[in-house]
Amino acid sequence: MIRLGSLGGYPFEGPRVLGGFHSPPDPGLFAILTRPDPGSQRFEVIYLGHADELSEAGLPFEHPHADRWIDRAGGKWNLWIATYVIPGGLPSHRERITEELMAIYHPSCNSAQFDRTWKEEWIGSYRAPTTNPLTTEREPPPGSGSA
Image (cartoon, rainbow, N blue to C red):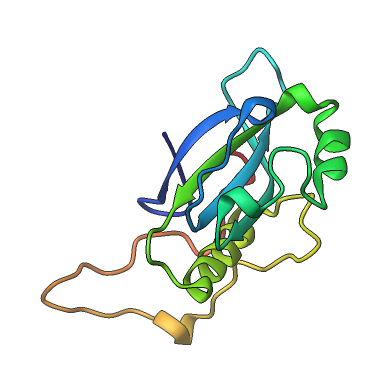
């Protein structure tokens, strides 16, 4: 299991080699990963997607962006997948999580990109009996495009 996202993140199953992946018939998100350095355990997120049924997302290589993934990874055997199944989750919920993760990782094979920006007036400083003041940085750390 790997965690993708800020703070606690989302618990994705994997990574597994994409070439041997069999999709479950469940609603969820998927992250396509590659290893820039094959000898390393570090992965780079190159695509994020979601589907009502992962088994109908065209995985492993029938997906409309599969050729782009293969080119980016330098071959289909350097592609990995991690999945996050959300039973009963609405499409809007999966889409929102996907957009959040895209804003963090900026996957190079997604045509849409989102900024991870926020303004002081959105949160500001605050105190509440159940929380401490915000301690996260307002800018993502260098290299946050990697998992």
